[in-house]
Figure (cartoon, rainbow, N blue to C red):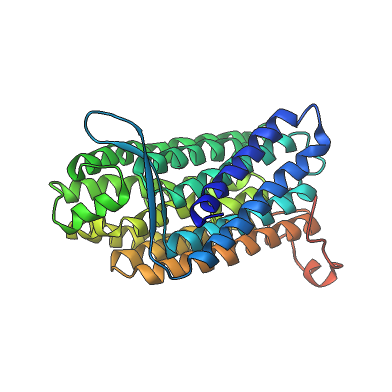
Length: 377
């Protein structure tokens, strides 16, 4: 089987798992957990295999035109390079860990079938963003993640905090998505294509007529999705959702998508010095502000949330000075350690019975060995 075929299967498998999980959740509940874990595991294995096969080889770019438009063509395009295959492997591994963890964490939750299906769909959408070679296909995954985050953050919808947090996450990210959508169409109009490789070629040839406007519009969408100042406020409140959801959002999906987008289209932003200055200022304010805000938090999950905001600021700052390698390295390392931090926080919360750091007290030394698969919130 070719590397391209394997890469196509990576986002498709979690999507099929999500559909099957929703259809069989009520009539055959015994299949829900396998349908949650096995597609994610298979996608992770295939993503790692694609990364190993690709190695440091040349980029693979294939496309099929979906429909003639009479102007800018819309294509179903797949793009594989060293950056994309590494991020896809990270997404697959973290999603598998989250699904495994959730089987025990939410084992007594009657809404687990829909939760597991949404996590699978969330994973599929992020993998679509990572492997996409066309901005319209990328936009589909981008928007699906926003919808999934609304339902997952509001999983405990019977509480006011969860309802407010899910609505806030949806509205704030959509506030950034409106200029982002305008920026995508403006970029395609200037470059003559939605295909990323053709856009980068047009940028290299100096073919953009409005580089600053386009970069700033796109940056607004990134600020919303990656929780950068001033659209960062939704992420700490999103801690009202289940802890495994926090691990997935913070480590490998949603917030990572914005940084990934800038890294993939860095020449577009680099074409405008003003946009880089705005990006650098945004990153600096985000880093400093999130660090100060974290000092005032007593909720362990909110501390980790502000940590994520700050770390994303570091990545954005690295991209603002043109160091894509440093940003990508930190994106991968942050995904690994932040997933472990949130999953570990779930164990602590379960053992202590509270999210409050002050409520743990001397119990740190008195706890027995905590189970790695807690069943509380």
